[in-house]
Image (cartoon, rainbow, N blue to C red; front, side, top):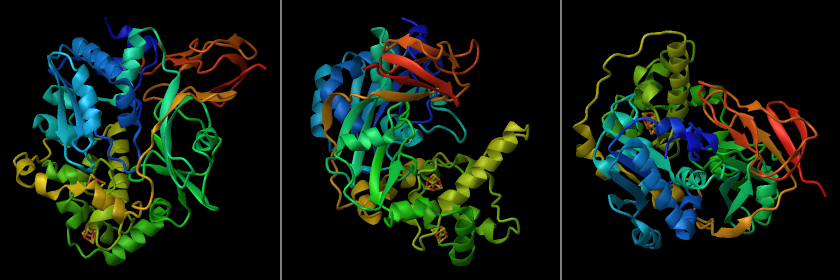
Length: 442
Ligand code: SF4
Ligand code: SF4
């Protein structure tokens, strides 16, 4: 067993930005942590996958442990999902354990999860491997398990929730459209729907339902246009700055409840807000913002004035990262108050139930049962870049016939990237705009 089989089958992180998994598993560590916290309100695909296929998760975990030389494998699951925990415990092999988590947000933040499951704190700007851990998303581990059997990534599991007739989790070919997926949930139930992709807290509003599902799309929540979550996601920078300058009273609740601050990282969103008020260029300039996870807790929950410290931090973070790419020096030895983690971490976590009420999602069905089978789709548009790194290079021609699972685009040699495979059988009808279109033949 080596990482080549994972690279060949196009496995990338299924729950985040799509970091190529073969690279993540090419280092060495003492523990693999599976992130089954799934803390975004109304999204349930990871739990659904474990309920149905716990054995496959364990197979992928064992392979991942072997690859990085780890003796321990941990699955972090919220305590309240007792049936999921029971299913897992029936399958776990030697060296593996379930660690139960409180029902808080953001339990699935990689650094929070490492602290909760291992008691280790990743330093500011560090990676999990710096404390010996590799963290993998549930669906990524399923895809590792499939890769071992020679099956490439051709499908994606998606939860569809909110204002739809039948909230559910479906398995769809990569490249299906958002519209296909929403139809699988029985369509929308409101006359003015807005589509939040990726989660109510960290996702974004998508207006174009012809956009394709990729290897990293996690969920779609349909909400009315005037819903709090939708309206907040539509604030532009001018509004963020205007209300931030005029109404921030420096109460610092945003900082006191910030999960990264609670881990001892030097992020203080209230200071970022304060600097906004003194900046003529409407920019904040606080170095600690680069450690923001963009969880949105400060903006949607902590701030009593309803301001947007998250976007101030995120904007500042983007600017700092761009400057680093241009060659600016790194912040050497950022302050790290590790001892703070144990002081306040437990009693300042945000209960998910309270969060759900606060952001106006309490009246929606908070379940998304898995539908059997793979959605039957006639046309897919597969992006060549669904991952961190360089886009894949097409190796097929327009007009050629293709079978599901065939390699259609390859990662460049010695460059970070991922292979792409056909998600349905049919004919290549278009290769353009960094996508490959496949249509089934009648
Ligand atoms: S979004 Fe807010 S609460 Fe979350 S890490 Fe960033 S500053 Fe902290
Ligand atoms: S919680 Fe809101 S009002 Fe208080 S410091 Fe933070 S941004 Fe300002």
